[in-house]
Length: 587
Image 1 (cartoon, rainbow, N blue to C red):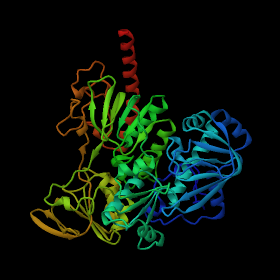
Image 2 (cartoon, rainbow, N blue to C red):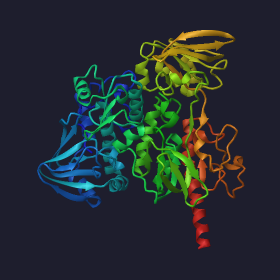
Image 3 (spheres, rainbow, N blue to C red):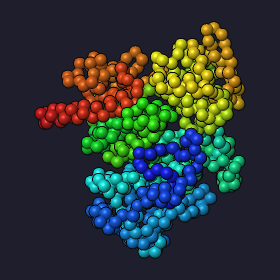
Image 4 (cartoon, rainbow, N blue to C red):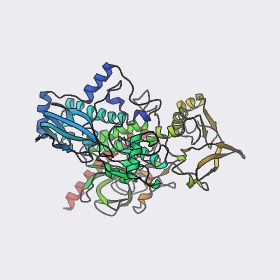
């Protein structure tokens, strides 16, 4: 799919990839002003013109098509069939809005190509391409595009860089993708914003109080309050307060999964561990399917800044790190479906079957459990009144805007809690950080402890627990803390929870895997499986492995999760090789 020509920002290196819109990043507005040199430098990388030699190298990967004047080459909301290299003529790129209006986005001429990250997986186009006059293009399918990128390293790097920067450009401008129409702060608006932002999907937010076009849309469609927000899809269709699953299906984020296909590896969870396993397994030629129930990055995606991850001395957000891995996995051909989760795993079938939450199933030879852990809910009466509105388990820039110049309460003493506290402190008037223990040294990295201590608007409450929540149907009004038998009331409308973790293993109930007392998956010798040749990451059933936070005894760090994701692939190869030998003997 083709994208926007735009003024660039001062950095074109792929290492600067950020899957958040600058409007949502801390201390950033819309696209920053750059000097002309920076603009032109980035423009050439976003929209490179291929040489005749480079075009010749691509010819064997595609099919030449000829288009008549005015003919549609690809439509918004439909799969574009991969990448189109313009050989002759010009292609106009346009987008639609909910009022059936069409806007010109860009023009592409000879040597330029139409595509962005979505085309690595043949996802629907965000825009429409139309021939201006007689046009000839070389159409390269998603499969052949991935082969081209891998086969021709230098040319592949140029193309891959352009695809990534184009996605960044779309996120920067917010001029393509779905438009969310509704009032900022509406719980369902926040829900859909978080889903799209967490998954690095371009979108626009239109507030009818400030935007005449948004107000006009409400007049046209006249939604009831419970139907807000509206979602205007790239093809001009309209959704009324859709679920995340419905939104993803309409945007083509969920691939069509064939129950007859047998994958070499099913990875359940797209956190750092699952994405690492996907990258290494797919790059080694295994067929890989990754299922994630909310957004790639998992719990680590909530980390505003990770500063102790090897190779990133200035730090990197969890979402940026996950976004790079997500693209990398697609580059090697891994299929990734979000949001889709496994509700049951049938371990007594060959191949195994994973039953999904839409009642369908997929088949696989091996399963990697990377479903991670989730933050615990408060066990307090009436807490459900504030869930989804005033209580947050994620500290993204969306939540940061909601608590601008307010006092907030954050509960938790781990690294994720510390990163969230420091990040939110740059927006909130004051952050009350509540920890059960006497301090932070036993659960948090030293650099974060030091930063919290030197951040003037973070107040640390040790030896404290949340004893009650005060409020009404209108929202949260105060949090009550209990400290050494004394109660303290903090007026606030926002509560952030980062309190411990519960393993997401409910979907393993019928598989009979060995779990520890807390529900984490036992692996290797600790699993007491008695499985001959069981490897360190193998669970108690053959062909099933556990990595990352969901594994009992794992180090709850991003680097450790990535390491396990890489290591498990060698163990999968060993299992598959042994299974093939046994099958050959039986035959």
